Amino acid sequence: MPRATAGRTSLADTMQLLAFGINHQTAPLQIREQVAFHAERLEAALREFVQTGTVKEAAILSTCNRTEVYCNAVDHGAALDWLAHYHQMSRLSIDPYLYTLPNTQAARHAFRVASGLDSMVLGETQILGQMRQAAKVAEQAGTLGTVLHKLFQQTFAVAKDVRTSTEIGASSVSMAAAAVRLAERIFPSIPEQSVLFIGAGEMIELCAAHFGARHPKHMLVANRTVARALALADRYQGAAISLSELPEHLANYDIVITSTASPLPILGKGMVERALKMRRHRPMFMLDLAVPRDIETEVGELSDIFLYSVDDLGSIVQQGLSNRQSQVSQAEVIIENSVQQFSHWLETRAVVPTIRSLRDHAEQVRRHEVERALKLLARGESPQQVLEMLSRSLTNKFLHHPTHALNHASDVERHEMIELLSRLYAPHSE
Image (tube, rainbow, N blue to C red; front, top):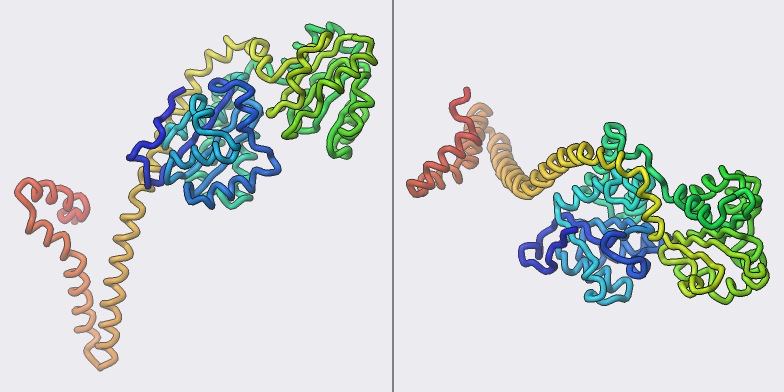
């Protein structure tokens, strides 16, 4: 993926749309988990970012496969510095994995991401909901301004168009379905196994639905909020516990799927070792879909433990890819047309300050002449003469600068200026 060079002078002190971040294509899991934003801290992070003065608007998309920042930035280099500083990392440590995409490149990237073209699972739909949530959080934080609002609204429209006009999502193997297939490599008969879900978010809900369809022997949901765990468990005649009760129950489960927003691991090597001893070393399948990871990496070194991360699902989710791949070119056409529309909108925004300045100047002239006319009327001057004077004075003042520039232009400039003035004022159109 192309990366713009940070610190270009042409970008400095210029407000521009910018998307930057890392994803599953550019960075390994151990880097992604260091740059992930926790949901409960996201609004505060956005406000902090905007308060630096580096950006005017900001939104953050943070998932297991990507962390991306969309912003309206003054200084691109400073924006990247903020990301590193926030996560207590050096720029040098994350620069090799970062991509920075300005203006229309940022829009194109957002459209492709929302349409499922940049996902680990080509055509997957979960990312669209995650982008909607990113926009919602930015709006709640007060960091979603005109540019990002327009970007996200068009992004959602493009994604809808792609999914209704193409079969990009056909034959798609979701991450949750891939989790079942991976578990079946260890335990061919899911109905004979007990499944433990740690967390109660969207990914766990999807996994619970897919495993529930296989009718496992027992299902248990562990979550920080027991009421939320119970609401999910009840759908599949399962049980619910708090995270603090995990050590007592872990040994009873053959399959463990975890996806929480915890900044620290939930399952450590010691806890898993004790569970294995109680199980008399019967194998356990563990799938850690969290970023940062919920299971200590050392757990994977234990005998009888089959530990997989979100990146390990890559080969499975490629199934059915050929049919979806044939739809990509059609989706790219839809996206490119929308990029051109968004680019035109950005370009028209660039002239807004000039238009505002022209209108402010015209309004200042108008008010001055109206005030002068009112004073003449108050002194008893003829209304007809005052109106005549007002209209003549406004005409002279509005045309003073164009005619002065035309009279003092060189021969080459005069020809170009005549053409421009003809377009602006269309003097022969009536």
